[in-house]
Length: 156
Image 1 (cartoon, rainbow, N blue to C red):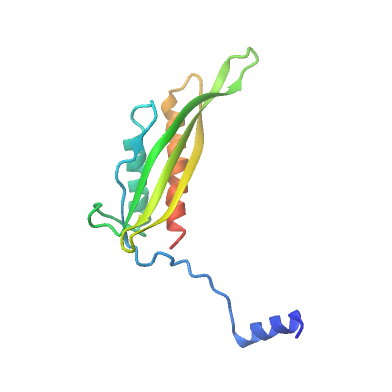
Image 2 (cartoon, rainbow, N blue to C red; image 1 turned 180 degrees about the horizontal axis):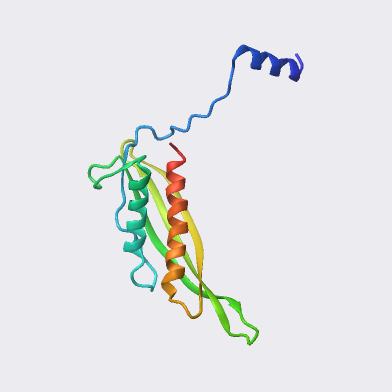
């Protein structure tokens, strides 16, 4: 039977392919301990962890629980913080800088006692030379938070 006939047969017989996104349907809650900060930049771990918790609360797919009660745990550490020149003006002075942050994260299924994934996430944010570095940090944290939450939520 040629491919066109097979395709027509599948279409008219009602056979469909479906993707089951419920890979982790047994997981209904998550614990997010404060991420470790292995960088020299003080004050990154708590704001980042809080942003993650807020994002999961807003999404509502997983409830936030203590480590003892949660079906899953998101562990992580901030392993890189770097401040670099991004744009120079016509006088070769830095007019814009970027903050680069790298995070190592691990998502653990406590119900089935297994590591679901371990990933590195790196992103950056910019700020003008006459602005506070915090602007670049906040932008970077926002990007990283969205990527990590997306990585977990997409599995549902």
